[in-house]
Length: 116
Image (cartoon, rainbow, N blue to C red):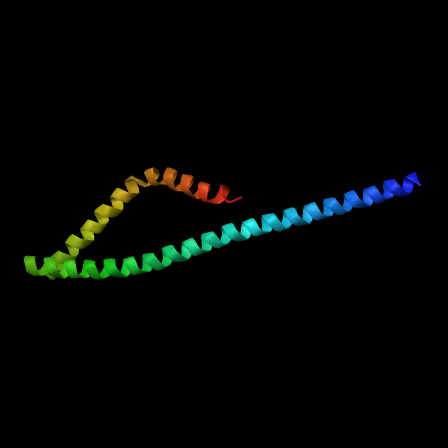
């Protein structure tokens, strides 16, 4: 008789543990899916906005180069000035690259770890 009660209690505990493990697994699976989808949607937004901004910058650069070319009476000089401007911006960004790492790391670690 006592063995039957112990067996029933063990079966009940085993059922509870299985339910807990299954629910925990489902919870973490759902959390990882949510985090992954937030990353995918963020990347998609950045890609779309980046493409539109790149096209706008391309046309603005071309118009600035042609405008400078007409002012200087040499289209090639206008394009060289605009190109030199972008080289300077690129060098500046290259020199300041380490200042961007820490804020980006903090933002993405908060994004990732606060969701879990």
